[in-house]
Image (cartoon, rainbow, N blue to C red; front, side, top):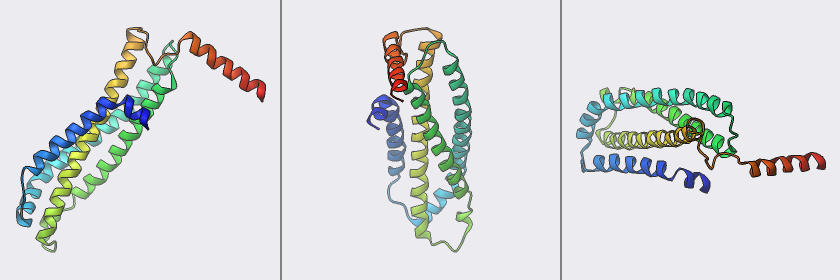
Length: 189
């Protein structure tokens, strides 16, 4: 976990800054009544649904593009370390989580709650804050995935396209050590 945090420090900072900025702008609205929350909720639901649609589409596209990235990674002449594939796996896990949560929230946000007369006005305040915090969280997670993907693509460009020496590449000494370990394990069996 600490290795993940260390490798993705900039992406996590970007996600946290996005979440904080969006959340702060929401809290600047101040204290609102249940009726005001109902009105604001009904006017903001269309935008939140568009956000959910966009994140769902982007998440699905990113998952498909990760397969292409894996094809490029495995097709390169250079041997990549496991940490590259673990980074791709981390992106896929976070992106899948984002996809599922956004899809569920999209369905919840499509419940016509503002049209119901049975819901007390006090509840609308909590629902309104929930939707705003969740949309802030989704935006932050989307920024995290995009920045992690950027780092991975940048590394692949440096390794495959520009043929630069990179910490994700096995060098001859590391490969010799790996082969030695494999031979020792085979002899022990």
